Length: 259
Image 1 (spheres, helix red, strand yellow):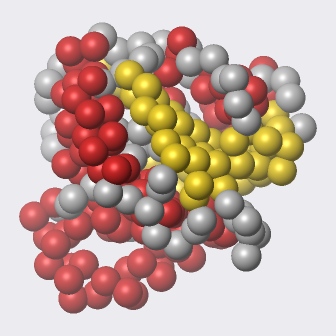
Image 2 (cartoon, rainbow, N blue to C red; image 1 turned 120 degrees about the horizontal axis):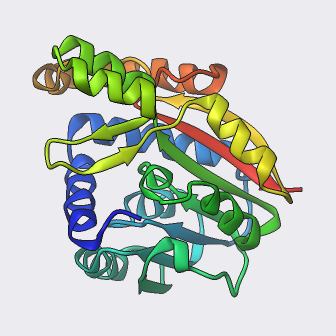
């Protein structure tokens, strides 16, 4: 996994991202897609949030669903501190926050919902690990929701910005190096399907792009565009997420269950 000092930087970046216009849209698309798989009127839910950051997705879900227990795991000490504080002021009464590497996490309980959002899979040394953790952690009727950083979007951005070396690295090695010199593995849908064929006991339910359109709008224009067209853009993005299977989103969303 990314070393601890670098991961603190990544965690802080994601924590700030969810406060941005694009981040808020991403959060709405993510939680809406999760709720598509939760039976209406379902009783209490338990959630395992891997790479939880500030538990933004879990806390947003708790506004609409009866979330009674959460286990939140993150290798950033700062993020687990934020998560603990924010969960204390959320509707969730029973929660445990653990500061540890995801790859060393061993499931002792099973959960209705297992989250590995925010591109967590892209920061693991062995991406296949996340599917095995989800398989061991999810109930028979539960679902795992995983997101990965897509090669496609960053390849396009690199070309637009004239970063030919970056583009070539993404195409040849599926690696993205951020402005902070942090290396992230990117994946495409074919690779994701390949991982799933290697992970026994788990099956693919859905794969879809997250934020297909606004993710390509320059950052300095996103706020203005969203403020004037918030509902319309959300509906467009949700439609794309529910009916597309491609790499063209800000991230790729994966839904899995035990088999």
